[in-house]
Amino acid sequence: MSGHSKWSKIKRAKGANDAKRSKMFSRIVKEISIAVKEGGPDSETNPRLRLAINNAKGVNMPKDNVERAINKAEKEGDNNEEMSFEGYAPNGIAVFVDCLSDNKQRTVSNIRAIFTKYNGSLGTNGSLSFLFDTKGIFTFAFPDGMDKDEFELEMIDAGAEDIEFEEGVITVTTAKEDFGSIQKKLDTLKVEIENAGLQRIPNDTKELEVVEALKVMRMIDAFEDDDDVQNVYYSLELTDEVAEAME
Image (cartoon, rainbow, N blue to C red; front, side, top):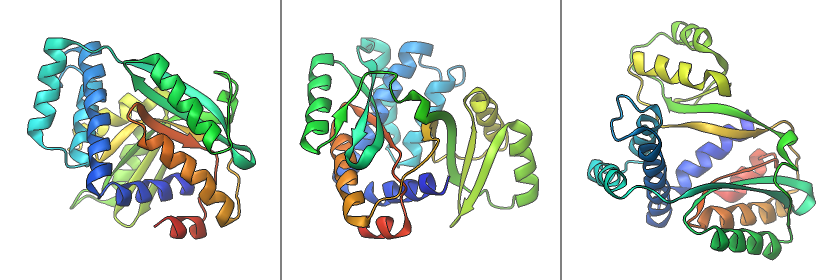
């Protein structure tokens, strides 16, 4: 999970500028709209909405923006469709792109164009599913005054598969089926989640030389800059040298 953790830190750093923050806000607004459409506007009875609100807090999205998004979704509904794309970046790096879009034709065209521009190849849906496992990932700051060993036992009891402590940030990984159990446990412990969701974790990663790895990451950045893209997953191993070159 070290590669995932490293990329999480890079994404937090990248999210500091206004352009990236605006993209993050836009994606969370879409998450909120989908959540309201599925389970209603009350976060107490809608776990997906509660999760989206937690993620909004994690990127310092103003409370007024969150409330406006909920009210708009309740009044106007949501016409976004969840879509995913699979393919390869250069050097055989597997790539998964998850989207929320109100225009399927536009999204398909944009995703195909990015694969082509960066010398990748778009595959058929399901062709790469065996290379990734869907896991629940939670990140948050360690709660003040909580015993570390006791906290670990609570997480393991709730279904945690892996708990990583790094620079004051905790990453908890769980099976897809135990996602709700961990979410409830963290709510009970009054832990403020920075970010949480189901993510595609590669079963195996591939190391590349820094120059080649940066070519792949330019493709990843292009996907993430697209307004319809919610998440991008890939099988590139983010070595310390690659991470440093990206900072």
